[in-house]
Length: 358
Image 1 (cartoon, helix red, strand yellow):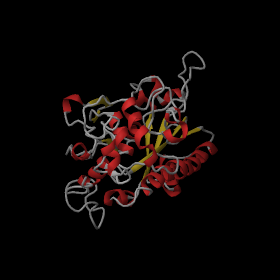
Image 2 (tube, rainbow, N blue to C red):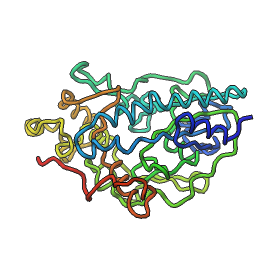
Image 3 (cartoon, helix red, strand yellow):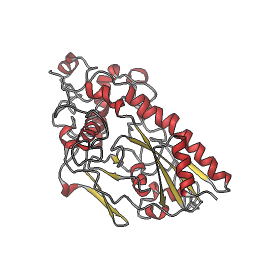
Image 4 (tube, rainbow, N blue to C red):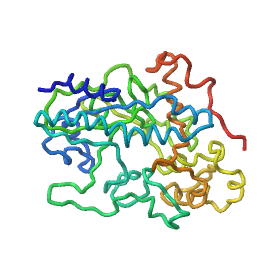
């Protein structure tokens, strides 16, 4: 009979950097449309796997000289190639014991619930790519599931997705920081995740209860070029999982979406200055800090102007911002942070990232 140690060791040998076990009862308060119990009603255990992103994939963004490696390797390479191979190895071992392994890799833009609003309906998703110049409409960037329904009473409409970061917390692998990024005690925010649901029952690992990983320093708030995160603790999102408080900042997902791929004139070297100067029609207002209602239309306006300057590889949108993740790594490496002393040289020398003088 496989033990937790057997599975953990197998996962680490196969390439995972951490492995944790959670009980499905930790999802009792999750919305039905984000509850993994509806994917695997007989499952008793969720097994979480963390895959570290080398700190160096952020180096090019930090220096402003190389933006390809982060989306192609830290997104595409891990999500599409590396993590699935570990799921296969561990899943095969579980099924050799006569139990089912429901492998679940990172995916998005496939559910009936909007990635952006948390509500039903077809909205844009940062998991898909807008290609105005080729489609002349917004269809290509809408979620790939535009219509779905329950197949029987008591079930949920496909494709059901659960919250990966909360699931990682449920597996005892870390906590969620103020920026809503998942934080690992060994790697900070530099991780991706994958999961297995199984009817093989294991004692769940305790929820992380060590020194708080998020320092509530608000560096993520200060360094977000789009000012997408709030520092107001009165408006934070929070809930309890057993005796653990899970909390993150109120943030503007649509503004984050726009800056994620087009981080504005100060942080986007791929957009000529004259493009910002020529477009006074309000379509770039959200990038220019002008008063504008953030939402799907504001994002579409940005892409309608800047699509031709958008470098895309590996089927993943270019993650050119890097504001919150770089700020977090920088602060966690300082005295008392979970990444203190992990590297010979600090991630950042000095207090601030580069800015284009224009």
